Picture 1 (cartoon, each protein chain N blue to C red):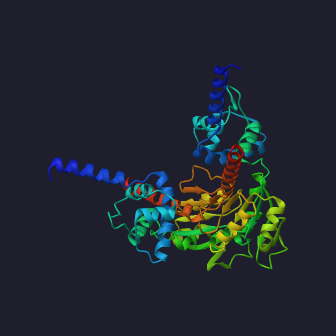
Picture 2: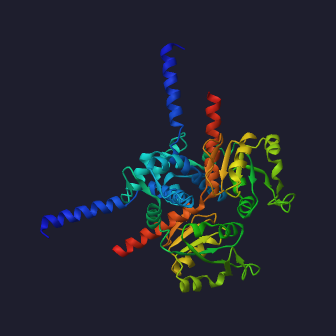
Picture 3: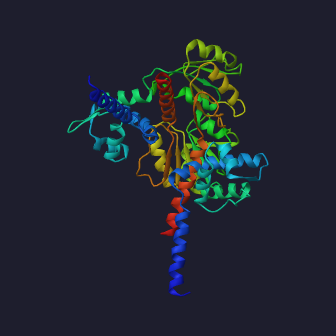
Amino acid sequence: MNSIDKVKGTFERRAREKKAQPSAATVHRLPRYHRYLAALLGEGILRISSSELAKRMHVTASQIRQDLSCFGDFGQQGYGYNVKYLFRKVGDLLGANAGYRAVVVGVGNMGHALLSSRMFVRRGVHCMAAFDRDPKLIGSTVGEIPVYDAAELERYCRAENITLAILTLPADAAPAVAERLCEAGVRGILNFSDVELPRSLPATVQNIHLDDSLMVLCYKVGCADREETDE
Amino acid sequence: MNSIDKVKGTFERRAREKKAQPSAATVHRLPRYHRYLAALLGEGILRISSSELAKRMHVTASQIRQDLSCFGDFGQQGYGYNVKYLFRKVGDLLGANAGYRAVVVGVGNMGHALLSSRMFVRRGVHCMAAFDRDPKLIGSTVGEIPVYDAAELERYCRAENITLAILTLPADAAPAVAERLCEAGVRGILNFSDVELPRSLPATVQNIHLDDSLMVLCYKVGCADREETDE
């Protein structure tokens, strides 16, 4: 390979890598594609045009082409998208096919709700166990998932190579448990505890504040009311 | 008022109105301000500079000034923000002080989790009642909130002037119940049911897909892994 080819190769690789990096906005939209593609497969639909998919998802076809083009060329002109292939590719990109193992810490109402849901199965995450301090819960199962003593948390996470933890603990207990999880090798935390975890944690944290969504709804309802009054 | 003053007045009013309309991104950030301001009040802190608030919230001071300036001038140079006043103003804008009345439909695990939380109280929403079809639940209370027969839903919402509904129903039941709620005057729906509600509904809908957040977490953990491998 001569030096011009080498430089050209580097540029092309960089261009591909740049293309392969979807924007934060696209990343937040991708799980929705994953859901819709799963639903299409469930209906036995193996091929779909961007305009048909756009109609189902209530977005524009150009938005879809843009979102999906940024990590590869899945669509074929006049043929549409291969649903199975696209579902797998979106899943690969999101980590749905990475086989991550997870635990749920805190088996209160929210813990029960998540353990009983199909959330983990649907997104390719292996929920291995749940943990609580309550002797009445320890030894029980929720949706076939065993509940263990919270004292066993670190030992279990290390032994079972746990990557993700879902925290559904009271706010005051959450930060210390999050630190214990990180020390035991957990790299991602979905945090339902009503507190934002310290930024110093080495893990990636997604804080879920359900009442923030309630507030946004209140805001939008208020706006709709004001528009009606103006008319 | 002469015609020039009139035109000038109209321009000024329009400028104010334009200023009063925060961007969608700001609106999604405002509930977080509301949380932090509530925490400050809880600590007895009545005055805070944008740089101090920025440090607590892990955002830049200029982001804060920009977010808060778009709906009025709350800060005073050299004095900082009046926390109580700002909390009230952000709450006013978001609808936390509008006294909206809400019902929860579906008292499964997620319904229990929301009814037992302080979500409604904290955000100024009056959660009046919950509804379910299960005879074992009807007549009980969850976190002091009474559970009524789902058959009573429309009558109750009309009689009690209910604005908001939180749906924690199975996916197949949710769309029909959402329509019944709209007919009974409900104008905002926070939807935890694992289905997107039809766009034709006259109400404002916020769909919550918890497993979308799980997917975004998986994506970020995967990115962090790739970065480490590259190093």
